[in-house]
Length: 440
Image (cartoon, rainbow, N blue to C red; front, side):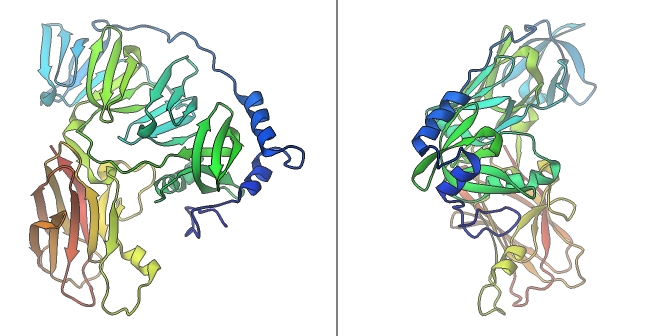
């Protein structure tokens, strides 16, 4: 069987035979049994990280901050206290307290690291954490830093781990491999010719130098240097509450449901229920406004399909994919670096786009616009459904350029965005849902 490649249509999600991997990655199979190889690799490669000091200790009251979002100039001062509901800073006029709802961004004066660390862990709640190594097993995972800091993750919180820096031209292929629909874990490898492949199986254990991986019922050991990354299969969960984005000096971004400043430490609780402690000296900013909106492009896609065309007797998979709804930026496919707020939902043809409404958000909002493609236009129906109930329907006449969509939604339910028309040819039906968002 051939491994799936994000650059081409995969033929199978199960890639290499176990012994092919052993031959490629491990020691000579003729000289040692698989069991001996496992023991040898564990003995040779599992080495503990040294622990060192975390460096300078900053406490509340000694760190300079800037607070913006009051409709005027940013306020400068030293941080006295902060949590998810309010903050207090010491200014030249004395202590100033502000509610979180009045704050956009709290910026710290801490110096930002020039380079990102090689390992990037992505969690189900959207958090991204950088470090030097990742270790663990199904009981839990740890991200290790050369400074000696360890951050523990719950087993069901992991989405993916990129184990090394990859060329910019492969960033999109990496994202495609991570998002591939499969009900299994996977390892991501870099093949000859600079292509990324996903090999599905079960991640048993990750040590500092090798990964224990179960493939076709057999457990093999793969050296870390042979891998680009790891992907964990998790059941989709979009019932996440609004989160405050806390960014650290090493470029990590944590989605906090709540947090508090205690002496020299910021302690946060994530939407997944995890508690993370971060030194104040490592905080770069706290984005309060991120708890009030969420971009549709950040949510997991449940379904994106084009409407069936009556002029085709049988389905054409490649055509159906090209006509399915998808996100674009300035008319083009987004790159891995494209900001979520720049993405429009493009319907090349009538169809439907399905996602699950996150916890804490009550409104779906955007503007639906005609594209500049072609001169013909067709009357359309713009609809929003929750589960099997249509909650909004608007006529989009052929002579209209845009309509506003502002619909109340309920958390936990599937939301269906639909573009429909009565034309059998479906000509002149292209529309864009401009930067769609969900609001509290």
